[in-house]
Image (tube, rainbow over all chains, first blue to last red; front, side):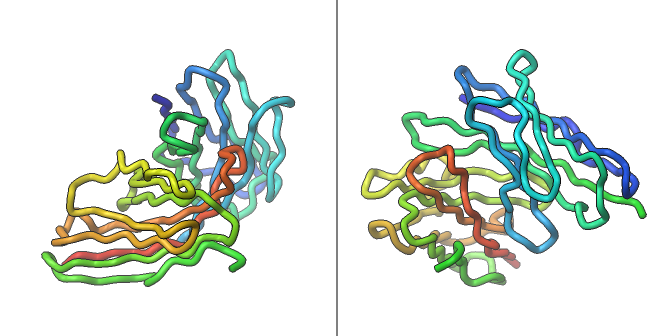
Length: 115
Length: 114
């Protein structure tokens, strides 16, 4: 069964600093990988997704993520964080299994941005 | 509609009462999912519907939880004899059949059992 680990529960960065949120997955084949963001009181919004091909994927709001098969990682990055990026970020892995297209989510990383 | 719609947005109920949560997916999305998010925790899969296939109920935590969906339309999640540990945000998502499109989530129903 697939699983996702987000080792950092909380991260604090200064506005304008760079950001990297870690995500490690476990899956036996090539996974589908996603990053979602959840702002306070809001639903989850898809930031970006990886299926195949170029291992560096670009998403919305200036985010990008890199798939590294050798490290089973899919870390999310942003070169310069804005105060509005403060939110909770979830990494997810999906696959076509006998149970369907179920996504398995990590426990999330809460991002705080200091002004 | 344009997005996934969930109702009610907030629900406060007394312990032992039954509650029904509703999800209206995006038109054309054949797959529908329910997740639970407890305070400070990640998303916990509950149930998955795909078209007219038998649902994947593997995530339902107890027989007090059930869900229905007619065809590719609205789904209802019912929790019977609610307990305080059922307090959480219940999120619904829908997607096209292919998993690589990812989900579109609704804003959730915040359930508080007092």
